[in-house]
Length: 104
Image (cartoon, rainbow, N blue to C red; front, side, top):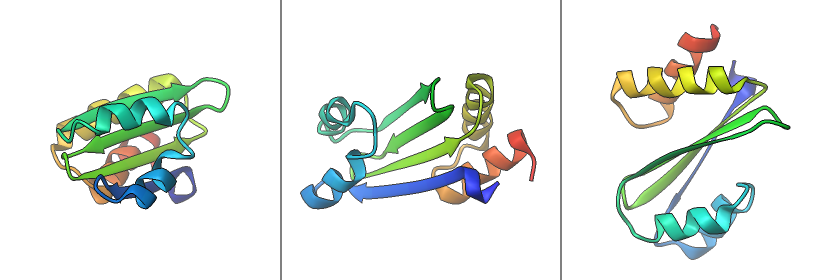
């Protein structure tokens, strides 16, 4: 399971870190506009061709992107639902949700 999940984070006030954070994200420039508001954000995107889901969370100070590869859109939706039910923000909670949905 660990080989399916990667995590990246950056402080919203660190321009260099944010540039690196946004660069691998499709439509990162649009996400940058949303994050620039410096308020809580929770968004998800799924790339059908790559079978990759990206879950982006921000508390207004830090942005985190959790990327899960080789999953279906249905699995991505189940991960989102499970993560919301955990009610915690962060890498450990996200990985727990993925493990529950995908096993392992």
